[in-house]
Length: 514
Image (cartoon, rainbow, N blue to C red; front, side, top):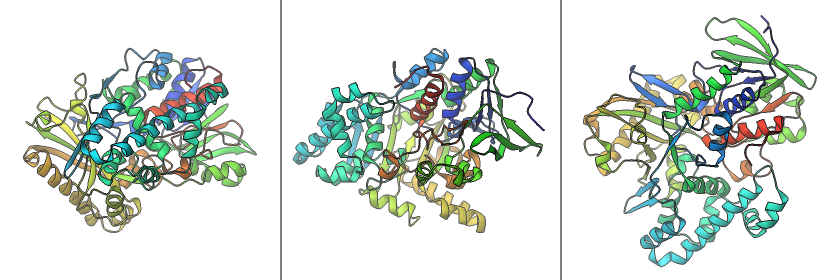
């Protein structure tokens, strides 16, 4: 079977960056066709329903760069969605609540307040803390100047900040902690949102940490009408401007003539029928490394092959829970996320969980979506949702699932029970009495439902190696073929908006961001 028309843009995959790109192109008058292998659209942005009444988003918890004039806002304005797709801001006095035995720190939006709070906790290390925070500010400004598209005049204007940023090109967060002699407990409190990266300080790129940390300080947000509304709004733009969006359409082969990608072969996962789709230009939202393997890695230039040689990010464990007749606000939860670690050394905590599969002293994130917006309920009125996230090793869970399904299910249950033990000890003494629903997901769940190789949560791992100038971008060296994915841009809600918008700018010449 052959598609009858040839769209301007054939987009394979419906992750957020692809939907942003597709919506912008459709709005500009181009014909767009989107193919998605899953029954749900939006990649990690999709929403699923359990027990017919509980709605959960696949992993996304909070986002940044959504304020007036920022990337997400500018894209939504371009699409005419800024009045309907809105966001609620987290508590600026403490958008992240960090908790370890003996210490508590609420991360504020104001840097001066952050220094004051850390200095109160560590009065003998005030100078080190001030110097570290000053470095964050300089590197943040320098990285903004180095963000594509490069503007020489801007770089010259802020040259000291740019030079400072370049100084940390190969640095991990741990390297910089050590440089400024930040005490261990202060390191842990500052880096406790490690589940946002799924890397410990001694592996995590300092650049990646600074971008996210300062991004959330500028404003941490949650969609007023949940993430499902964001995805559906982008899809509606594509469809109302003549575009087509197909689900259950799995790409099995790329159609390549020499150095030109002309389209794809697919199989319908419902009817099992084969089909070919072609486009004037093919946009690849499939993992770039996987797509390159399907096409043939030898067809790409040597420089692109080198950029494709990235490591996948670690994967995660997720527990989606519902409590009934319990107000989580009475137990210290609200318009913020909570990060907890039983182990004061995050490098050790990560190694224990990821390498030894030992969750007896867990480090994890807690989010409470029903407390973040009142405009759209994702469960009955007498219920609230609470979710837990930590790191998990794909190879370990994949082996369990295929060789011992009972052990696989037992391990997932064991992790949740250990987390609930910690929650009952430190936060909600009787949470188990109020649990009316719970479901857990492992790295293999990510692979099955979000189509991410090795269950990775962020595409390429956010290490210094993968965050430098050699990072993969949209360029593929093949004709009529572009990458548009977290690994060819950056992972996360706002960065994927930026990735889709930047590719739109490059191909249309219509500037929105940057």
